[in-house]
Length: 136
Figure 1 (cartoon, one colour):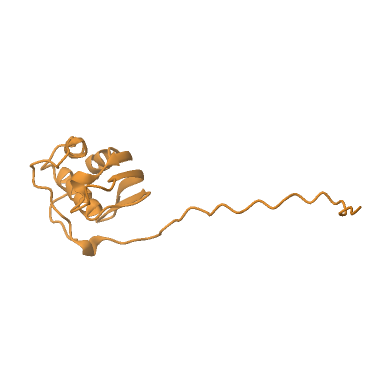
Figure 2 (figure 1 turned 90 degrees about the vertical axis):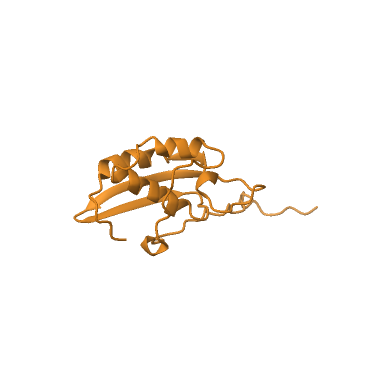
């Protein structure tokens, strides 16, 4: 996505760190069922600059519909200095979202790099003692 304004990636990175941890992301989830948990654990949310490109990467145990596009929309507004950093906190603390207009970034800017699944627990084989079975 092309953004004409200069983005302050340091402000964006500081705001992104507030998204790390376990949070109820329902205010950023479009149409998430009320009877299902919207709590997700974010392990990493980083903002870096690579020449003229700003890259936002995140890693979590799961994502909700539009969570990434809305969260990164908030980070972009913070980077443009149109919103304060504490907007992240206000959104996460709200039960139904905040009244500020949160931009929904276009999906064509997203790229799924990897999906990691937990290793399945393997059954433990009984220990072989090396003794032959004794029959009476």
